[in-house]
Length: 424
Image 1: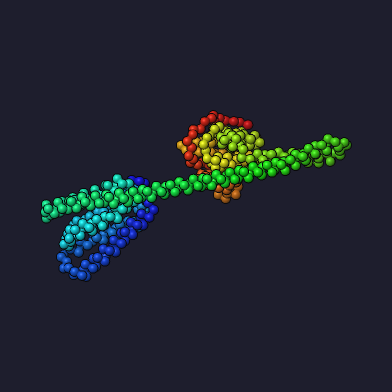
Image 2: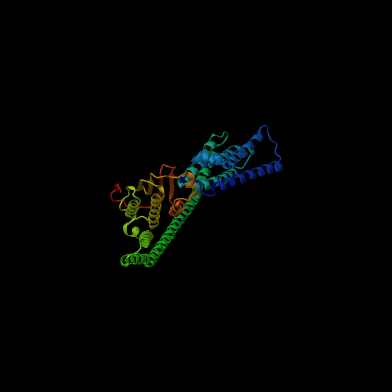
């Protein structure tokens, strides 16, 4: 059995087949009664009930989603079993009662079993097609063997016909199964190509963003940073050469010099944040460690680190996402949480990469998480969605907060480096 999920379109095709058969049986029955006007013996009308009972049951069964959810893997096999058992019983027991020609009964039986055979090959592997072909023929042979009044010659020819039908069924099922396998392979290749294209687009976007951030950093360094640096030097020089400076002017000058130096420090910090060099130069592990230590130092926070120093062969878009989410989460802790302690953890296990940043600060209510208007949650979630990750935020007022990012990544190399705890 290939999988639990039904192939797209299989259930609607099955339902259509049952509906067409039901309409055909009603028309054929009405035509038989109107054209031949048979004299029905007492109780003979009941022979027509099985022709309708299995079809009505199947149509209701296939149209009830609750049954599919409840039965799971058994849902389709049960439907196929009813769709096979009904025609075999009808052809083996009921049609002979109406004097049907054996060759007609054989062709009708094969025709009625053809669609269930195709559906089996559509959903399951070729081994199930073999089981279908051999099982249906064996089942009908047992029915014929138990039928009274069948001669040895008739049973012999029926056996040959059933063997031929089994071979033909297996051959048809083999063709359908091969076509479906090829289609499934093409669908998988297309999905894989689409994933690679998405990854390429995300990588290209991240590379473009990185280059633009570096360009902005250079522009700010050559303009704003130089201007603030020159302003601080000039103010310092004025304070040095101005003899007899009035106390009020001196206080204003010191204030202006302090503002210029603070502005220069913030500009340099912004330039460092804009540049993508920490990832390019250090890798994700060391970049996050350095980021956490820098922000914890500025905020006078006790830092607990559980981050490997080296993490190789991670896709660039994954590294960018994890670094920026860690940066946003740590900045939020430093600026808004009023925390004493922050913990940063980055783990890789079984192809799954998990980042968690937690603190013991003020926290916030659930509705603030849902609004996505605080702490840059919207931006972090958008970054996570770009790489197919899941961002979860857990927090309660007065109990701190935890930001967690999980992603499945195709990583083949092992994580190396030491883990430890750093305190500021």
